[in-house]
Length: 363
Picture 1 (cartoon, rainbow, N blue to C red):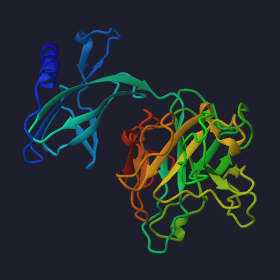
Picture 2: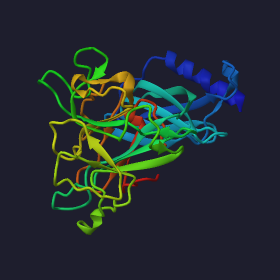
Picture 3: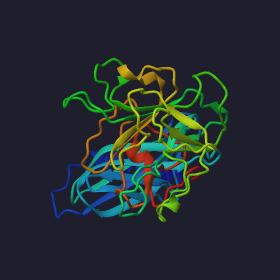
Picture 4: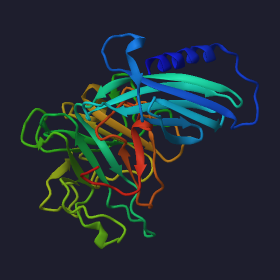
C-alpha cells in the first residue's frame, strides 16, 4: 500500500512539471486526486496513509459537486469541465468520531484535454466549542409568503458543559453607505460592523445559570409555535429550547413554556427575523456588550454567511469565515446545515450543505 501511495505522490510531481495539453473540447479533462493523512505524528512522507472512502467536495463556477475516494484514498474523474476548482477532502478519524480529517487543494486549474494529478495532505481537526449548526430561513412550501417558522440551531461539540449566560446572536445585514459591506471591519479596528438585530441569552458572560450540555443541540425559534397548524408543510416549534422575544413589542408572541432570548438593541421593536435567502448570522460570547461600534472579533464564537446565487460575493470578514453557503430557494422547505455537526473549518462553502427538511434539535 505504501509503495502504491509513494508512486502516486511521484506521479503528482511528474504531472505538475509537464506542459499543459492543448485546449480541446470542454469536458474532456481527467482529474486524479490522492487524499492522504499522517496518523503517526512524525513528519515524514512515509507515514502518510490513504484517506479511504472520504468525502470530496469540488467547488467551481459550475456549483458544488460531491464525490468519494476509494479504499486507497483515490478519486478518479473523467470528462470534467474546465474551471478553477477548490477541493476539500473530509474523512472521519478512525478512533474518535469528534475529530474530522480535513485537507484542501485551492485554485486547482483544470483545462480541457489535460490530465491532472494532485495530492491532498489532510490533517485532524477537533471541534471543541459552540457553533451555529443549522439555519432555517426560507420558510416552508407555501404560496402565502409564510416564513415565521425560522429557527437557528447551536451545537456544543465539546466534551464539557458550556454556559449560555450572556451569549449574543446578531443579524448583520446593514451598511452605513454604499461603499461598505455588512460583516466587514469598516474602520479596521478589529470588529464586525453592520448589526441590524441584537438578541442575547439572559445573564452576563461568565455566569453559570444556563448550562449547555456536551454533544447536544439547542434550537432557537423565531416563534415557539406549532407552525404546521397554520401551514401544513411547516414544522412544530412549540417545544424548542429557546425563543426570540422582543420585550419592546407588546404583540410579539411569547410561549410561556420556552425561555427567551431578549432584544438589546433598544431602537428595534420587531422580532428576530432573518432574510430568506441572503444574510449573515453571528454568535458571540457576550463580553462585548456595546454593539453600536461593532462586535469585537475576539468575542465572536462563530459566523455564517449565506447567499442566494453562486455568483454572489462574500462580505463577511474572512477572519470569521472564508466562504459562504448558497441558500435554497425561498418557500421550498429546505434548510442549511453543517456537513458534520459542530465541525467548523472556517470555510462555509465546504462546511455547509442544503438539506431537504429542517431538523431542529437533531442531525
